[in-house]
Amino acid sequence: MFTPRPIGFVNSPYASTDQVPKGLGAQHSAEGTLEILPEFAAGLQDIEGFSHLFVLWVFDRSGRCELTGSPPCDDRTHGVFATRSPFRPNPIGLTVVELLGREGLLLRVRGVDMLNRTPILDIKPYLSGVAPELLRRGWLAEAEERNRGKRPRT
Ligand SMILES: C[S@@+](CC[C@H](N)C(=O)[O-])C[C@H]1O[C@@H](n2cnc3c(N)ncnc32)[C@H](O)[C@@H]1O
Image 1 (cartoon, rainbow, N blue to C red):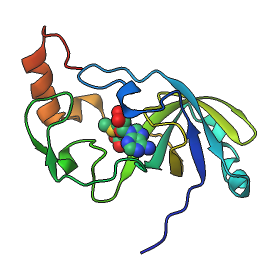
Image 2: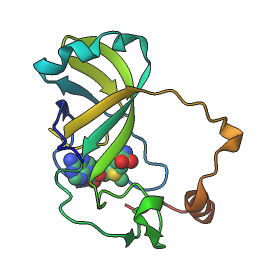
Image 3: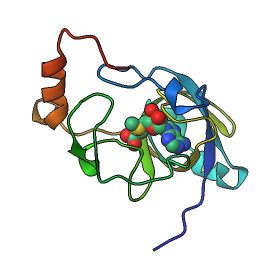
């Protein structure tokens, strides 16, 4: 198909996976930077106008694939394609971040859930055209309902 190559790396406060907030209601408000490699600088033209970005990246430290599993926010098993598990056939992550500013090759962002120095594959402007009332949250909504009032799992 094609050989992916990083366009840059994430600078995040997380050195290990246990530091990243997990489970129902986990907030991703950590700030970091997307450090773009110099050869891709021209691709950043006009990015400042967007409030939020999709970041596609590599789970470079997940090391295995599991087609089913129980995520930290539920005690039931689900298929990998119905979750955001790091253990995927193609270890690609997708995170929406808020763009706080740009200094040359550095994009300052809020909402990182990646480990420090995670390779970035691509960045695209976040544009959502799906009306909130049309969104269904599948098993996640059921897990939230079951856990309402309980203490979150850690
Ligand atoms: C549940 S995944 C969701 C990631 C992304 N938002 C997505 O939906 O694809 C987030 C978890 O991936 C793990 N993680 C983050 N960066 C990673 C990396 N570079 N390699 C392996 N695992 C990573 C951390 O444990 C983090 O809590």
